[in-house]
Image (cartoon, rainbow, N blue to C red):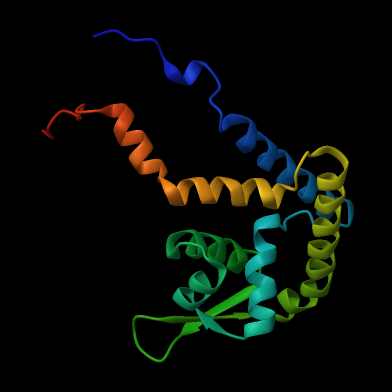
Amino acid sequence: MASSDPTRTPGRLAPLRALLADLDAQIAQVYKARGLHRVRPRYAYPLIRLAHAGPSSVRQLAESLGHTHSAVSQTLAALRREGLVTSEPGPDARTRRIALTGRGRALVPFLEAEWRATEAAVAELDDECLPTSLGAAVEAMRTALARRGLQDRIADRLGDLSPPPPG
């Protein structure tokens, strides 16, 4: 059965994804302009958290950041390659303790300042161009999703349609 390709028309999430990618790229440019060519914006959150919480297991760090274990593991692998964190055996064979290196710790004051500057810049954008704050818009979306989740909304539109059985 032939159908038109729905990915050929940008969906409603496409502008948000593009905006987030643009914002991330602009933060990366701030880093590069200050000589941090191999540091990525996604490194800031775990590095700052480790500086304040101290050595943590991957699970503890993931939970404290509100990210998945898999996503944090991938970021930590990149941080290890850049020499910003170390990984050593934890209290049992299944866990690893992640700690900042001297280089990672030295980077934290800049990352904290950039974090605060980014928050101030986003607040400025909120005031400058949005009819309501970005936070209020996100909260309104969360409230609507609490009333009726995206999963239910998608399932209603799919009706009885199911994928073919495996194999």
